[in-house]
Image (cartoon, rainbow, N blue to C red; front, side):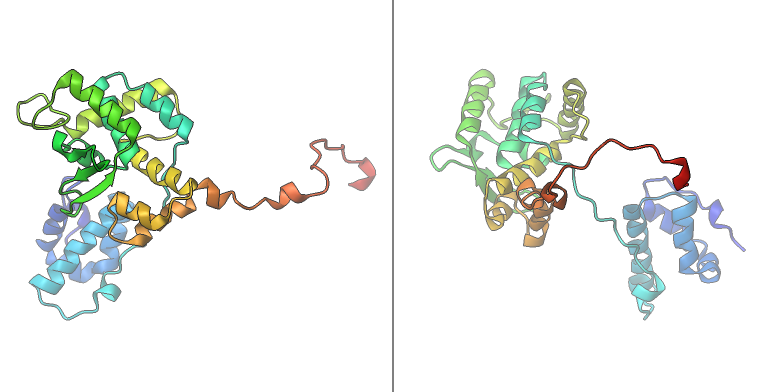
Length: 278
């Protein structure tokens, strides 16, 4: 019987792994789908997201390619994806972090991500024409899901962008890259972000997307309607935006802990146990 351990594929190339499994179809029928999931989890040590990708490829194989009329949810169950909340920076931490970014261009980009709630891919692709100072909005063209949208243009951000434009005089892109006609790459900003995090000594994980999370949470804590935040972020579903309600201090900390309502504080002094009480 073929051994699943003999299948070789790059660790981040799940479709290729599935192709290797297809080539040993006897192993699939004998071992069963459960064994494949156990192999991916215990032997390959893949994350839940990677296993979901592999299972999606297997479902495509059996439903579309092999035309199997199976209840795929029962034959190839999908593991439950862990529900994790991002770590949110406070306003003071955002300010301190941005001041630790040593290159002007990257500081302006990351500041724009926070001020307007942009994804890093959206911020680096801005053009000078996208900054509408008359209407005080930023036009995001072809963001996630190939959708255009408008988001807020902060007066303070407008001052920063104007100062940046006077220094660099960008033409095609607001943040040009090393090569003519191209905007700056996402990886370059992410590297500077990690350098700034080390300089800032903030223990929380920080990525450019952390500033977008902070944008949403800080607006909620100021009392902004969640529907407005959904439009600013460009979320298709309100449920995606509503997850920030679980992270805002105005919601989580709005009720007093019962510990604070006790008539007296809990004493930290511990009396030694009496020998007769043992």
